[in-house]
Length: 235
Image (cartoon, rainbow, N blue to C red):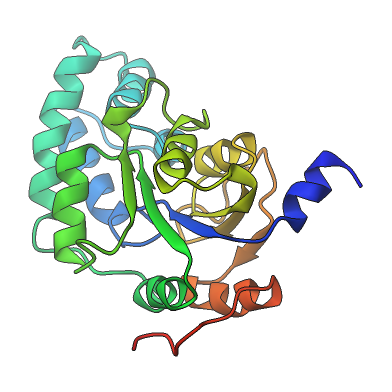
């Protein structure tokens, strides 16, 4: 048995969730915020540029935009303006994606550890979790401003696992972006990818362990991999 195969045989003890595009339908509002920003500078958001930003932290996305459009602004200047535009676009508009609440409840009922690992800044995560009523749902949280390297580096997932006290091979990551899947695989974790309209046509350099239509479909997937609820999900 190879090391990769043995990692896939480890018992699942923790679920680690990406946030934007995985737990919450925030991508349309982040996209709108980038388009609003670019409109101020005489540009429109191109699909190829948007695709390169999925899964990245704010300043890394700002660097992509600066290079793609040749903007005469610093990365920090772009990120600071975009930060305010994104918060304004998100506030009052967020809804959990299908299956998110059910999967979190299932994981809790099964006795698994739960973590959030998002490239978003702490204040973005706080706003998002409050709006989708998942404040306090996780045993640990890691945000993009807490790691030196963002996705596709594995740092944020390793930090989440460390805070949970669970070995990487016993963690399953839920992601939607190529950068996130690469990061999870690099961390030595299993990764389930839930695609949406903005990511389904992107190239995934590292293959996930499964591609599912929504988070609700992850419950039977986990059951097939040995995870069972101690109590009915939702109780």
